[in-house]
Length: 467
Image 1: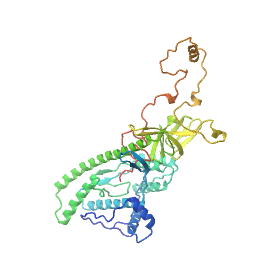
Image 2: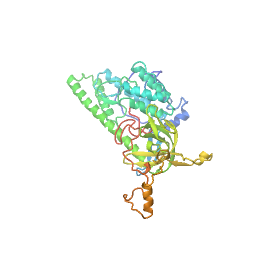
Image 3: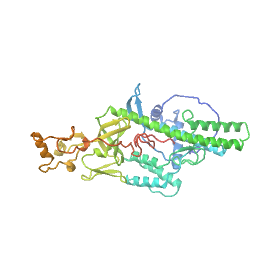
Image 4: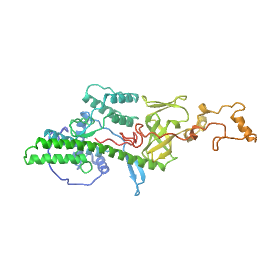
């Protein structure tokens, strides 16, 4: 029960069954809300009013509301991807999220009041070192972050920052890095806080048909509720101790399986994205620089919603240095700089299903093209090749390799070099050499096949961690 300010005043627990009044999708309700949102007689007007109240209450206490991009994959009857989009987060989604958070907190506090064994969802406070690193990154992105006071102030400061960066060029990067700065939420039988939600007591209760910890919570609540209704004496200490030990093992197992399931989810989406890009090798797209690592920078394209790596080796017009603090790539000779949020044009170079990687090449203006003469631009995709300023061929001394080749051409000598090697007296250019090593996985922190974050799939396609 909630009062007019959105504050929960009472919790009543009962065994019940669901009676569906209507079958509708999030998109359908969102469209109705756009039309009837201001109509107080609309059947869902009270629901949205309560949603606004409890959302404000949660925001005021310092709950951090991450708004991360999420890929939505549409496949045909054979499982082949035909469309990948960025799934919009609608008010209809947020309404259900708020109601679920409220229910999760209510049942947790109900169990705590009765000192009943329970499974909690715990999210510990981030380490000082992790926050310091994020603070430097935010400052370099032009978002000052002053950290003062204790845990409550930290919650409020970070929640305010997430609101301030809405629409900023580095929004996705900063949201992802902030999420990585925090510890991973886990299931445990020991009560503790949920830092991200600024909640003193939290669990997962609302999805027993798809999440095992929720089903365990339902069983625990049912046992406690039936005991109260029958006015039965509280279970003895031996029974409670055994139950507590079982719950600790169950919570640990559920946390482990959750990590595996999250990784499988990311892998499935990344696989569909790579398969989608196989159809677009050689095609050009507009995109934005999303993130950076030492090996290159990631570019997000909108349709299809996929990100790929532009490797530093493929930037052939100059030698670029990476500044991790400022998150920039700067040309040593031209001083050309790539920053987070820069709009770029790319061409799809490779899509590797085994490695789950997509490689992009920048589409740049050719040196000496018509644009330099005042006409339209001529475009090409950068590939690893020899910058003239660094590897231009130099005259060779008389009697050197060039003279030897001339002698061979005149029939006065024999070319003893191995068959298939270069015949023009020069070393092979970088673009002619075999590529070495694996491409780094998106986001740059994990190799393919490893878990982590927003995961290896990158700043634009990782999915949110479960709250």
